[in-house]
Length: 195
Image 1 (cartoon, rainbow, N blue to C red):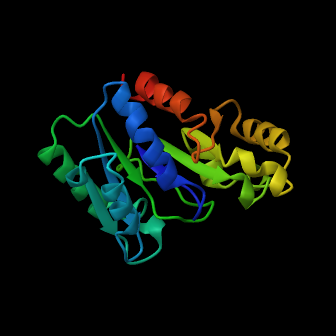
Image 2 (cartoon, rainbow, N blue to C red):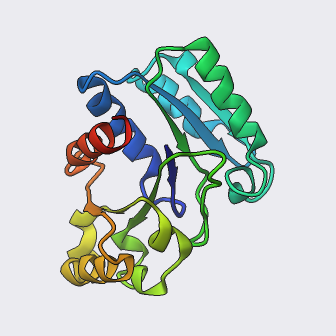
């Protein structure tokens, strides 16, 4: 399952909240993180104690993050094969993209299901910009909902516009800092993706 979105939108926070939710539903999780030239997100997850550190691999893109999730996903595919081999009980691999712009998408060769995360502090107009991530992701997550009044965003309007441009495809609202909305997303993944 691919998790993409702009820098700072809350992708790593979503992964951190999603791991225990999926495990509570009886699902074994492994993780691949992507960054330009660092393993910072992978190290953050390893230190968190939420997951066995051996189940977290880091891919360093060395270039624009979307290149290794779309144009040439070979490094991520190799990492996924390694996790499958080392942890055959894995039900889902969460593949977090390095932060990228609204044009970021995942190759169908790499993921079976993908999520695009945006946040209200990035601007209420993001859905209207109709980037491929907003339009084509299996699920759009609007994160940091609690910040809307502090950054001048009409959250109800943002949600309505997201639903309009996505033409009925799922839009979920979360606050990954508190975990609000993540349980609903985990149940959706367990019911609609893993079954």
